[in-house]
Image 1 (cartoon, rainbow, N blue to C red):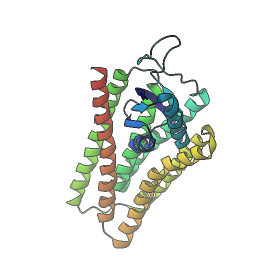
Image 2: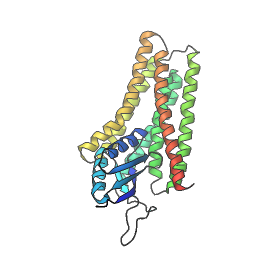
Image 3: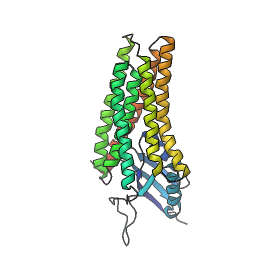
Image 4: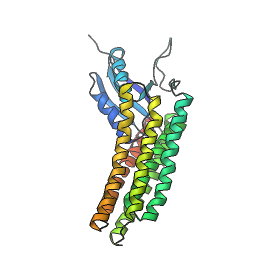
Length: 285
């Protein structure tokens, strides 16, 4: 018996960080008959090879939907014709209410990220500055996902490449400023540092609450929590650093957390750049 193998592409709605892409890839790879899975955070597209598509794809779509994301097949066969790789998926599920919710999340992330950058300057905290960039990065990824709905692969990839380079420059700037502070013997204002970090945690909770009404089912509500959890861990790390700086009367906890958060931020920026370059190559640009 001959098994039909097909290359399939999906538009993915709901990703806001590189860990989202990794989570979807890991879930898809566990399914029988699914191979060569690649999820691009840059273009918001998942590409995979599948054996017996009629049987395996419904299982894949259910598994990814249960994580809290929406899949829309991009190269589904048209009635009476062959598959069209340039077909724009049906995004009718992206309702005006859901778009408004995503815009609120973008504004919360980018807006508070800018505020937190100011707070990091006032408090003299490198960890707070790195956390602020994480807010800005998440907001920009969500923004690109919103405005790029319906764009071609090349256009999305070019926009993501510019975004990835911009975020990488910001991340390197934080690393450089943190290295400079090592020699400056500057101790941050712990009350300001901790206060801004606590507000950052509240902003993350608010973003999750905005999204939860637009997620269906317990699994998807749990997914919103999981998405917010990593950001909350970063916020709590800054609060912990503030406590340690106060307790030890030493700036090193602030610097260590700054290096850790900025390192993760740079990893995400590199993922965007790598995916964007791969997408541009695939698009022949």
